[in-house]
Length: 389
Image (cartoon, rainbow, N blue to C red; front, top):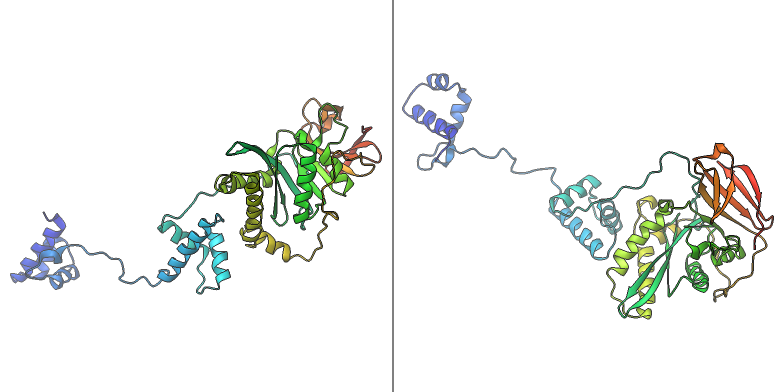
């Protein structure tokens, strides 16, 4: 059944064909002559579909993205997705630029194409520090700062238990992976040594307060295997505040990626499969993943763009546990001073001034001087004797 608007059109045209004056028709309907003549012209005697409303959409949209470009965007996105690489609009644009395809679509165009074809995926925002100033380490050049962490225990079929030791160079986003059977002292030495042979040795390495990194809580001044390794080879360890894993946000985010894209997808049944797979994942990440903070470059291209000489271990084999106590060097503990006005150094408490309450401080342990030097906003505010054992 035709709606009232169609019926009105039909009756108006019929009255016109019956020689009724246009002025009379338009006056009775409250319509203009242009409206009447429009429907008279569309009238077809043996087909009443002429009275139906037609789309006002133009037959040709001149600003519509060419079909070829839309297909390229979809193919590039699929290729990135299948390779477990970042596949958002920015990553797609960088890939198309590499292919030298013209015309180059804008980010907005790519996002529209992804949305039209239901190829969008959720992005998570970055953590933004708020409130109390935090003594963040610099990362202006390659190997100025690494973040490192253990993942695990994890299990292969069998079961085979292992831990993943992961490190990331903050400046270039290069990663280094090592799989260890345990968190023993020798695994710590072997793991970092193996990673350093590929990434190079950092100036600073930032870790959490796991016992495997700092040593034993029973002997907090004993300097664990990581501290000894670093100080013997000119690297300064930094320990983030307790219960604040987001301070190691880069490695924490990488660990999630490592578990989802490597452990969750690669089938491995033996230690050899695991070691080979970890190295392949490391190489694929460093050569293929593109990062916004690197201007769309991969980690290896970001490294190649910087003229800097990296420092590598001089010997092939890792040092053996237990390393002798270093005689020089520094390591740093970052802490938030609570309302009790106590500085916690791996379970050992030191009193501090009331004005430091609810502020972040850096406790630098100078091995040669056997002292803790306390810094607040880069100014030394206190000092404690600290005989290392």
